[in-house]
Image (cartoon, rainbow, N blue to C red; front, side):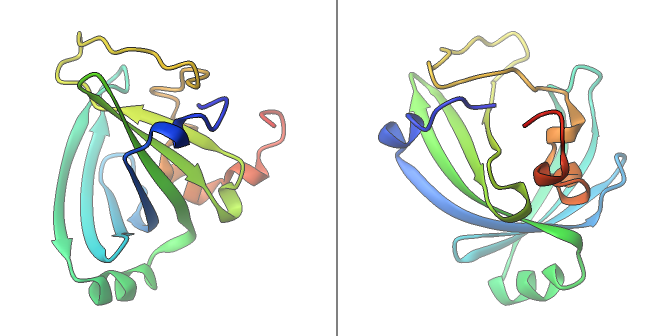
Length: 151
């Protein structure tokens, strides 16, 4: 999780993302995404025990195709802004959620190996890696604004 919005000052890119899920089965998640003007379909396999890795396949599709597929997705659609912040050679993707997940801000950094280390920016808060309730697929089923004890 993220504690402040200082990441905005150093972000080199900001995108709007809308996405939904055709399947939220933990063995085979199927996501439809529109990022700015591009559409994508993504299939994800199960996460490793530590939550650090998982199989992922993604294909670009047209925005109109993605919009049609979003109509078939399970409620609730995810709507968010993504800020990309590069520190040294690591890129952090910071997601500010909107709609039913408004108020939640989560950062993710891609590592080259499981043992890779990265600089920890001051704005980075609580570690939530492997906590499934923060997965977008789960946020679509149980949005942040329905949580009670975490707020």
